Image 1 (cartoon, rainbow, N blue to C red):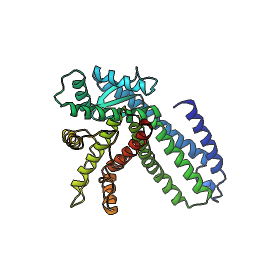
Image 2 (image 1 turned 135 degrees about the vertical axis):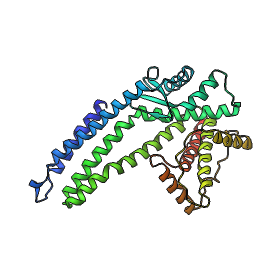
Image 3 (image 1 turned 30 degrees about the vertical axis):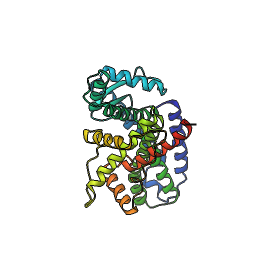
Image 4 (image 1 turned 90 degrees about the vertical axis):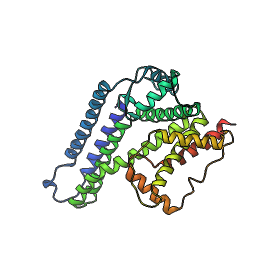
Length: 321
């Protein structure tokens, strides 16, 4: 964390210690003081942050490097988008796209497809290659937002501060000890869930607004529409909780290719596809519940398709002026 974050942490700790010290509970002698509790919480989340840094360094040393042509392509995009360490950041391979505190991981299957495209060895059609490149660019920008924003550290910071604020508020209002401690235990996972979903949504927005073309944005919109339709087909008759699958597999590539051929898209005059968004409220509610149970950290595929459409409409307004 930078100096600004540490100064915020120190200020909030002082404020919550002061606020908590005014608690008017009668039995003050039988429970730990609020300053002690604040230091305890601060120590826990500092340890979690340092532990995460250690895990990140371990993973960076353990995981294989991304292929050279993929690295060159990624570094060029990151530099264009203003990442200061674009030319030095470690780029590793894992089974998913993700951002650690010190490096970015590329989905190994995507990296394999990208390297084959860049070296002229791809067996995919030109249309399929376009889909792969569009999806990879979006995924990279999504993780770039997490990395550049320091979302891991900010998430831990918000959990710790939320716990302190809830504890101080309940003690100030003379809530019973059982309610206070239940709330203290429940606050971190709730804060983590809300913060993570918000960060994922904003990373999606950043990626949609910064992909290199409206064509790539429209392809990613289609990607999430296809993913949403796959879940809807599974839940047409019975409620099924599918394993979370946000990978560009061959089935998804094939479905997007069919849609692109059918529409013969011209992105200057593309009409919005409202059919997938105008759902019956009950069906939409069931879809959102199933999506949440499948993956709590991310917005549903349908929500992301709607966000992509919103960003597409915004970009059309100022890119075609």
